[in-house]
Amino acid sequence: MTIISRFAPSPTGELHLGHAYSAWLGRQRADIWHLRLEDIDTIRCKPAFSAAIQEDLSWLGLAWDGDIRIQSNHFPDYTAALETLQADDLLYPCFCTRAEIARAQSAPHAVEGVYPGTCRHLPPQDRKKRIESGQTYALRLDTTFASHKTGNLRFFDESLGWVTAEPQRLGDVVLARKDTPSSYHLCVVHDDALQGVTHVVRGDDLREVTHIQVLLQALLGYATPVYVHHKLLLDAAGKRLAKRDKSRTLRHLRQQGADPAALLRQFENI
Ligand code: GLU
Image (cartoon, rainbow, N blue to C red; front, side, top):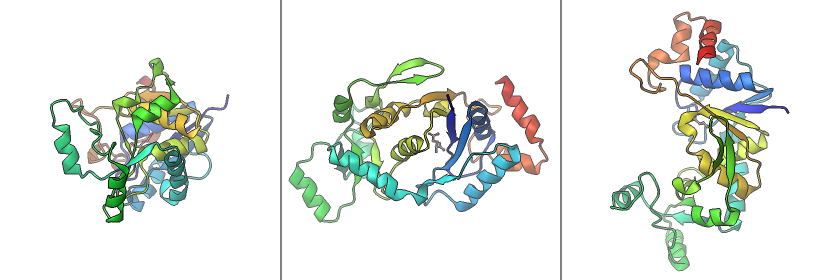
């Protein structure tokens, strides 16, 4: 079997050692390894960071295969995927502001981080009126309805074995934002399928989102890859490395004269 994987950073800052570990692990596992820049948030993502990512990977000696996929060049692809879901009546417009969502989430029975469903059952004429009056809206997945449609789903997580997908844990996620005609979940699922990714190698912090991404794959008729969620590297205080922590960025290490081969060798013992 040809193992196809990808490294998919968002160019919102400089890569740190944790990214290097993720990239190294993916490169090790894969026969074909793609670089994808997840830059649909055109405000937070900067071309300078995209360039730095390529420099850092080259410095580490981690060579990607084929062309770099730059998501912001492919909005029409994501719109087409969105339209497929829309045609199946799986999406609804959400007019809520952040403040309204935060207020609803503080209600006694609300589940933290899960959209409370305020706009799910708005009457059609109400939706129409709001849209015609120019109110902005996001598009959310009706996760309960979508899950009924697909029935039970599972995925293979290399550290856990077969896992039953529980997309309800994430609720009605946003698939098109008010300010961006797409979303992380939609783009990642679309591009993994397009690039024929067989193994998604990424950090443990993204384990939870797999539950919704597996549902989207089923709805869009895409295959579900194997998931490899690896440990996150921690700093001396036991906290996850962050892009804002300059001392751990690859650029800083490079400027300090670090040896990239030695740096990668230390990952072998993780
Ligand atoms: N772009 C995401 C991030 O930088 C990673 C997406 C993924 O690996 O699925 O956190």
